[in-house]
Length: 330
Ligand code: TRP
Image: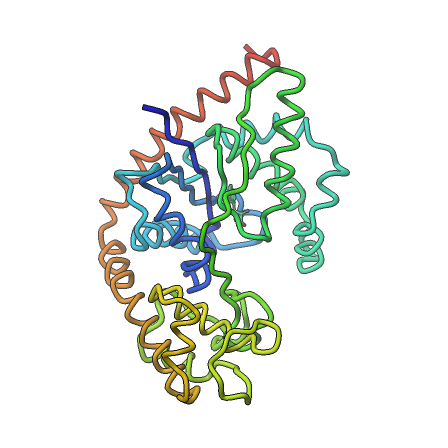
């Protein structure tokens, strides 16, 4: 038997996921669980780079864990854990930061963008954020990392740091590759279909939250921005709104874009939007039920975290031990 390749990924506990997070990322994580040895992390340390309230963060990290499981991450198949429960993440970050150049971090577009947005709090953690992410990935000797476009540069710097370290000390780290899903859905805003669906959008109608009630979902789809063409046809350039709705509908039903075009030939946008809204509500219903159930099963969630931390610690401590030995700390 050949060993399964390892996948690592994580999300920040910043609130309730959107339909975009689900269809674009989470659903792939779920699908990968049988074929790969998966490690999924709630990256709570990363969220310290912006100011927050302790009680709020405490709630959000449990909520994200429950969302992971409600979406189909199975703690029996995958390692699911909280980043702060594994001290090696912070420890390896320090070591790796000594093998990372200021110039490299200065080039990170996400840093520049975040620093621009939080001018009053450009802290060092925001700057070294990619090093913590590199530690996350490298501790588990990950082969593949499913990441969106916005994280590609961080994966690239992770590879550079790992290669640099290996160049000096031999093969300590596995060099991770990006995992590009076979069918990746990039879900756009319902109000400005040229930009990505985001939960931080001020316009509530622009995104679907995983926990939106069915009526809310249908209302938001009814209000989705389209065009005046009145033909359900895929063309990202000239019909971004309709194309986005088609991607969403395809993603939740498994129907191809051609099938969808045929299905709605000669029908108005009203019908189409209604059908997409209903299909999305139907898809999210079991996830919502499971989520509510999990949020009242605190003991179960604690057990998951306990087991996850043990399994993750075992792997992470092995890698950190190797690193310490190589650099002369043992
Ligand atoms: N930085 C990632 C994001 O904001 C989250 C993250 C942290 C991550 N560590 C990771 C993703 C390791 C993949 C692998 O989306």
